[in-house]
Image (cartoon, rainbow, N blue to C red; front, side, top):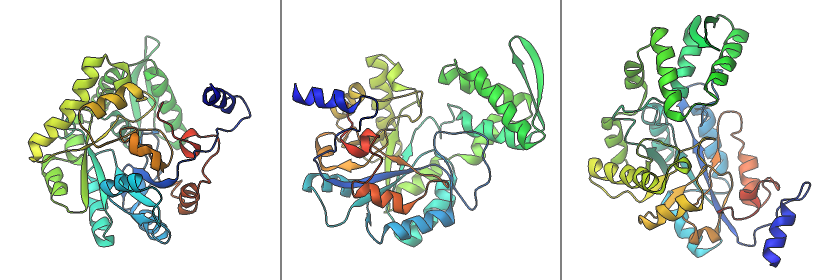
Length: 343
């Protein structure tokens, strides 16, 4: 009763959630593409970009007060409680070739362990990662043709303001679509703009050859993603189980090694919760990473399939803020920084 009342009070307007009594042992930092340099983006993709130089600076600054570790080491420290220094895991999403071409050489130079999510439908070329394709269309074309409210229109992409305005129209048209419908919609836009999605993704996403190279890297930990990147929370129990189980098992078969960690699909379309956490645990996974922001507490030893991650891009690669969060000085109003958030 008392605990329930405390949670209720913490959620009232103007109130802050109670601080977690469990010690903070570290954090998982989540990255998208790593570029030689970063230009302006027109699509708010699920995971942002960071330049190689900024990533290198961030790692150097963090290492003054924390350890860059692999995922198994972070999990071990949840069992032990507070380490002498907090543990930080670098986790890469997006499956762009920049992970192998730009990030991997840098991380090798710095002797920095890292984790990469692999969803097998990407190298198998079974899905369209629409934010990446839409960004390329907006950036490289002068106009785009689409149907708005039943009327065929040609919208300009000839200037910065026009790009932003046209992107807003496109995103509005996609607002009520399912993830699969959005993929088809953007693929059709691209084809009509003279961009072949198959060729585009072949040149920009990790291939099986790239993934096998990553698998041989002693610094790398490979983690599975959902089989088809379906939003798990929208699926029935059987379909959700298949997305997790087959995403893991297929990757194991291809690589010939055991895969013990998983990353739930990211973004507003999917909010993994207790049902998904329990399923991942029942399938024998040692760890699974959510899209919830926050730090890793010692108490996560009992909730390893509900690990939070802090999304990092060029704009928020702030070592000072990350180190402050590891000292318990993260955003008070955000549950995952103030207390265990696994419900």
